[in-house]
Image (cartoon, rainbow, N blue to C red; front, top):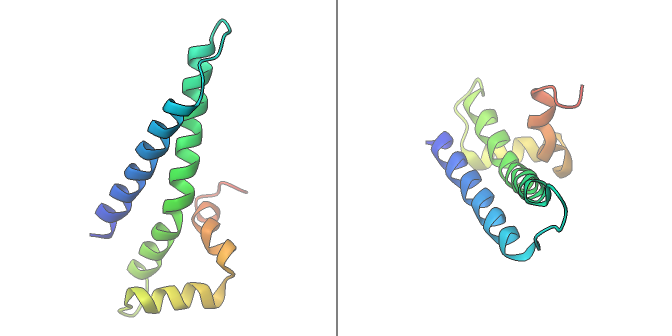
Length: 100
């Protein structure tokens, strides 16, 4: 259930950002402007979706790997109580070795 929610939430954010940028970012007048524009829009959409969805993923993993049965609010209290709020946003990135 948690995987379904986080995937759906992440996809929604990605497509919302992608559609918004496609409407607002102008076409580039250069040789490979279409490819540069598409790369910029895709990269930005991925960054926004991952940034917004990562705290939910951290909460899901924390709850699923807990040794005791933990509710969502207790897991939130445990995460925020141990770490600062900004650190909880990037905890998943450190687990996957993105900043090592």
